[in-house]
Image (cartoon, rainbow, N blue to C red; front, side):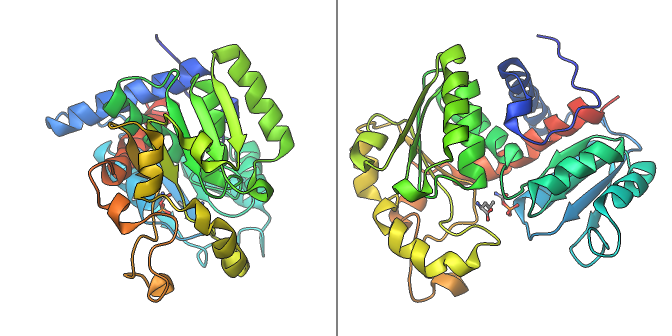
Length: 325
Ligand code: CP
Ligand code: NVA
């Protein structure tokens, strides 16, 4: 279906229709196929793109950079010490300056209000590369990976296990409702998504034929899930919660026993990354695996590196559809 997203921001899934999300996923697949056989489009030729990062990033930063260069745009990285953003200059003023110089802006940071404010005043498309509330470009890459495996999203059992109220969980929940999926959040009760959001996604699912389950019962929550998904238990900015989260979330580790509970031989495991799955990071040197066991992370069901690669193609789809010629 032809779709015109030119000039649109990409801030959160709630702003997009199922048809628009499908369009972005189809476009991403086409751009991926073309890149694999060496077809280059240069759909962003001559554009300048600001990449603002208040928080660290490997995948998102690199995906935006590679997508820009693939399509002929110039990416300019602005780290947390490079801007006066909100400290010596208001977000509103910074937005109006950047909007005069750049053709689009990516923002990764803390408050979702900041990216909304940027979008309100910049006068150019603004893309959300993660805020405390949403991670919409991640959702696109995750769903593309699911489609590559199963060919569809509609009706598919998808269980997100862990911190049910973080940015990734919230984006997947809304995305899943929009795409008519059998979407489950499996987490301790005090980490369930907020009631307002739960009510909203249930309404969306009633229109799309999707199903929403929010539960702390692991066995029922993961049964017949084709996708088991987890994310870190402590998101960026929540470091003070480390000990209490580990204690609370240990029973929710994705491990072989949980994989077996799905009772689906062809299920896949996804994680947005970075992941704590062994002793190889400073933070888990003594603890070892947290949200996912080494066995599952490195095992035959894991698709986490396909998923990471898909960040480039899906981000490129967002960029060319909102900014392209
Ligand atoms: N998944 C993700 O957003 O990774 P980065 O934090 O490395 O960008
Ligand atoms: N929920 C995580 C996602 C990292 C990509 C965080 O916000 O730190």
